[in-house]
Length: 146
Image (tube, rainbow, N blue to C red; front, side, top):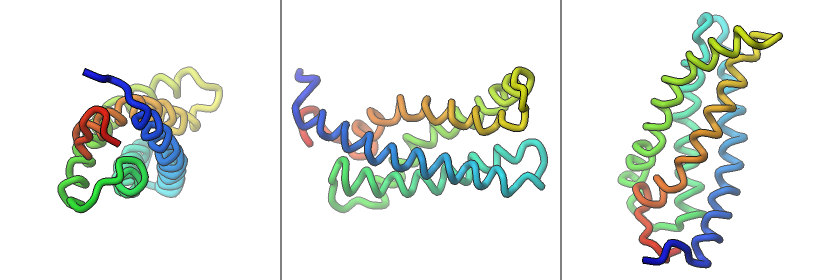
């Protein structure tokens, strides 16, 4: 069983490039939604995280489909799988955010920054787990195929 192929490295580099763009886009969207919904109260970051994730997942899906995994057809099936891979990450994020925000609010000199820092921490966690999920679930790429 071959765990590495030259094409898989190139694919991972493309994934990092698309993911890098989407990370900046997704975090920027989260920050914008968080800032613009402060009228919802102290848990507005949950709204911002959920709706920002739905939008950025859809944008990421297209980038991964067209530029990283380069699959044809199956838009709806692959988008639903993509939602499944990221959906588990969104649930982890939504579960972890209140804990991180609470801890950060108590330990930062500027507690208002806590949701932004917690969002950045959760973004890193999602990046670490999503590549294999997309490769094995969303786009079902067998080992050695690029």
